Image (tube, rainbow, N blue to C red; front, side):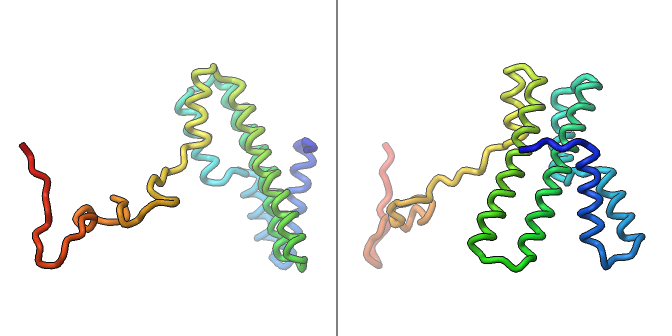
Length: 177
């Protein structure tokens, strides 16, 4: 992947915003450009950056480098997302669209991974473990899905329904000694 200079990224960002807002008035274009230049981070990325700074309390220079890495990754991700949006709006065969959008989304993932590797280079091996928990929190586990006997599953059925007794018969219980 080609690394873009700040000038190239800025020119492309402004070009995308202006082309996307051709029908809008000059005030709307100006507001969009100012908003994009102020902070290219979305809400989740800003929260992640704040969590990193609070957790590791880096030296001011390192913090500025992290902010720059997050902002550069945010600009590149924004450009790739704009390309995805323009492809999805265009007239294209579905299979071709899926291939191109998949490649662009892979590019977005690559940008984030490169940003994460850059941030990790400033940390000790022990702190890198904590960094992984911030940058990629574990997905919630669902333990009872998959192939299983739903009639005997404690999650799918209530415990009293597991023991089937004929109607009118008392429900058996375990005798405790």
